[in-house]
Length: 368
Image (cartoon, rainbow, N blue to C red; front, top):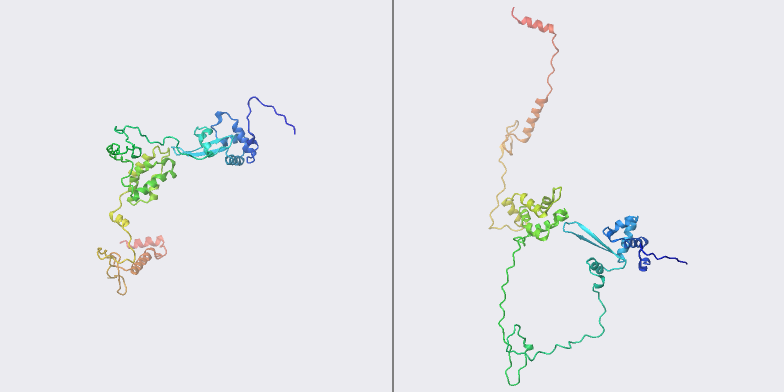
């Protein structure tokens, strides 16, 4: 095989043999890597997919090339959500294989050489300290120091003399524990179940709309107002619908202000005391014996007394639902009779009388 190559002075890209001969990279991945490597710095803001589109690469071919570059360590991606709730993707592509830690260090501006790595252990065995093990013996113990030595550091007394003791210093008064500042955003009763459920509902509103993204402190500040809805008999689904339905077309500028306004202005009417007690009272077991000390429940309504029907036929009685005096069958019979009287066919009239005869009848009836 013959080969002839001319080295260019400018407008060329050097590619390492490790990239050209990489067994796991296909031709599309190698061309994409070489193309991005030779781009100027001003073209680094574009996404990798846009560069692949400039090369005329099909979506499926670009997907395979991207998977190969990521699997071999040439491509790294980070997906994060900013403070506005929008997701952003950062891509780092290199002509050498990088681990995830090395890529993160380069992203943060730390050179790869300064990234700490696990090195080989030092040859030999560890030894004790060669210096600094001797206790101080020529100090003047009559002086008062701010930090008195311990008993282990005190000098030994001469034979026949009482051992010296280091001057004892009174213990410093412990500072009074400063009262922890109360968190104004914390709810009054964080252990209440309604407050906990309300806080979870407020934090989950970001799944319905990104404009309703709340922080933990913001959700705790609104939890007490939302818990009042639950105490008044509103279900969790109805509360979520009331806070997320009919949002402004232009978007929500402040999620905290918008939700506080809805929780305050749309607060439902407080439930009746009897209904609230019935909802909060525990349900008794159906087979449990009745409590003799409990007040007797009101007896059910008694049925109405029997009355005599005013309808035709034999005398019979019935129980009226109101103030009616006819039983059901008699009322139905009267209704059918009224229907027949209203819609029965009229009798046919006789043949019309000629006008001559009618004139003669009128003349005869007049007195002469």
